[in-house]
Every structure is written in C-alpha cells, then in structure tokens.
Image (cartoon, rainbow, N blue to C red; front, side, top):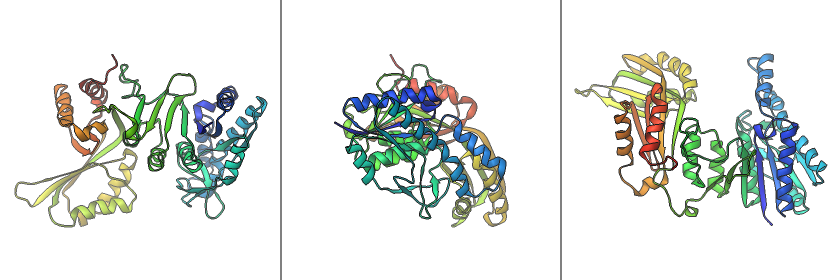
Length: 406
C-alpha cells in the first residue's frame, strides 16, 4: 500500500463528465490499496471568469477580496469530485485550504506556503478516506483565504505530498508527459521517461507550461517524486526525480523557448563604478526581474553599452523607470525590442561533456540566425534571437543534438 497525491488540472475537471472520469481514476487507485489525497484545480476557464468579475467591479480591488472570489473555483470542483466519489461507493470528503489548514504568508494573490498541518488529513487517510483538497489556496496569518498565484494548484499538490510523506505526486493534465521540446513545433519530439528536478526546473522557468516553477522547487527540496500523466489516456508519463534515479543521462534532454522576453540596450553609459548598480537597483525597486546582461566597453574605455532582457510584460514599466532616471544614470540613448525570443538547451549531461555551446552556435549559424545575447549556467545555454526565427531555431537545435524520435 502506498500513500499518493493525485492532482487534476482545469482541463481534467472541465465539466461534470470529466469530473466523473477523474473519480473513476481515483477509485482505481483506492481499489489497488493506495491511500489517496487528491488536489484539484478550478474548471477550465473558471479562474479567468472570476478574475474578470473582479476587474469589472474595480480596477484597484482589495487583494484580500480578490482571493475570496477567485478561490471559489477550486471549492466547487473539490465538492463535486467528493460527490462523484461517494456516488461510486468511495468514502471521500472535500477540504478547503483553510480547513486543513495550509498556512501561507500574507502576500494575497501570490502567497507562499509556510507549512501544512497534516494530522487530521493523515488520520482520515489511515481510515481509508479519500481526501479531496482544493488547490491554489491557503490561509494567511490573519485567518483570511489566500491564493498562490496562477498554476498554484501544482504547488499545493507537491507541498501536500511532501508534508504527507507521499511516495509520489501524480500530476494529471492534458499532455501525457514531458517532451524533448514542444511537439507542436517539432512533430518528432520524444517523450522522456524520466527527467531530473534540475532539468525540469530550467524548463519550467523558461515558460514550459506543464509544471509550475514553484512546484518543481518544492519537489526538488523535499525529494518528492512527481509523475506527469494524461487524464485522457493510460499511456506511461514522465517521472521527475533525483539525478541518481537516471542511469543513462543524456547530454541534452530538451530544447525550451520563451516568447515572454524583451530586450533593452542603454547606449553610451559612463563607464564608472556604481552605474550598473544604479540601473539594476532602480529596476529592482520597481519589482522588475532582469535576466541576461551583457556590457560592451568602448575602445577608449570611457563609455559602455549595457544590454539586458526582462519579461515582456514589464517593458513599459521598465522604460518609464529608466527614462525617469536618465540624468542620474547618464546614458545617451535607449533602445527597446520586444520582438525577441529566448532559446535554451538544457541537460545535466553538460556537466561532464564539452562542446555543447559550440554545437548550438554552429547549428544556428548554419541557418543564418544571428545571436543577440548569450547566457549560461551549469546545465543550460541560452541565446536571445529575433522572434521570427524561433521555430526554425528550435527545429535546428533539436536535430543538432540528436533528439528527434527515430
């Protein structure tokens, strides 16, 4: 007998029929003798509808009341799934985040989990009851409902699995696993049987929508084995696990891309101590995250050009901050470009193999694709290119590293 957490996303519980299908999957696990806790998202499109309602009432709404409204989607699906399980003869009970409780900080709309009280839930599991938890929500220090940000149900599920000491956390979604790249762009992309936490974290941070970044961080921290599966088929999924579980590690496990990028270049900035701190300090004060940074110093050493990337949605705010601080920063001109995309080659095998970057640069060069910016980490090489070349670049790199399915 194993203790497992099963998480079902919005498409998996989109309507009553799909909720009934989810109940059959849960019953199958119960009949196999497993102790099962389930975490559910809101029905597909429901959270967007609730957010739109908040926007229609007030542009400057109270974040605490926003959480009160948008958390109701998961309350509905948790109750419906508990009913569907009871109808199948399975002992089940729904639980909201505040009932467990899942303790969070008070950052409404983007709260972080601080701890989970599992005494009562564990007792119910030991009694053979299926615990159906509403994802995406928790309880702040002021006893107000909080929400964890979009995609937060993944985080709820993995955190619950960690707190319960579950054998694994099964994430059911509308895809049947993690692929070497987006199959919509590369039809020959391969599904991976296993992927390391580090590789999955890099993919999630690059915008891969399969798992939410914070859920992977928690899984890696607490060594929660996460399995990504389809709600609509019985095919094997992908296991996200420790590197030690993967015997043969590929040099490159996948090609990821992010369209949510913009580039800013500050031209002829005075090359003196404190300038970079002034630029990036002002952006940090405005809660704008910067990613790639490149600085080129002029031949006479008096000025420099500073180029960096940031989320495309933050570009208007960043431009306002930098234009306001032009005199203090001391740059001659600012150039912005939102028609860029970041492509990343990811793989734990990079630690022990040379030439990964060379292969990337050569493959892009052969397709006539110019590289605007480069950044590297221990298991990732990323480049910024013009957005129009995104699909061509992904296909070229996928082939260059031998990832195409045979």
